[in-house]
Image (cartoon, rainbow, N blue to C red; front, side, top):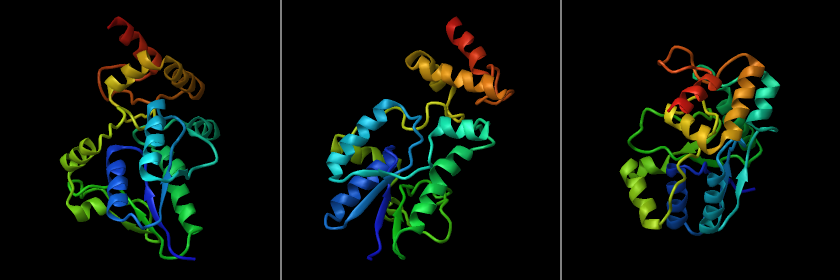
Length: 219
């Protein structure tokens, strides 16, 4: 079997721009598109991905763990936080490594890291051939936005998990008012595990989501 050309496509601005540009530059290459979604992303992301499948002319294959974020929390009885990003490792990185082990030798993973973020590294080990096309093109963040604007592609406001411990306070507030079901689901997990997604003492706001909700209600 011939080596495969595999594009990691999360739906964020960088992987979206990289995927569309690679398809433009190499229309005859049989790219395979894969994504590692946790099942906790907002609905607009999946509408965006369906549009991308039409533009790319191919399906985006889900490569992931046997359960979603909520199932993983239930398995580990632990919440992800700024010290423990086990969700990224278990739900995204390890499934990709396992998937590549099943591919023909010499297969390549294309990752959307830009030229202006050289400090970031691929996290897929030495056994996977990883390339960063946007670094070869010299693309910075401004180039990504300019390219997407030219293609008429609008990236959703959020493409990561709705219960991500790394999100900003304003994003927690948006979740509280725009998707209260998921917010209170997060509250239930905090009560069940006895821990919080947010870190106590990192700022003057309450760490627990239930106490944070009281502050949001106060305005």
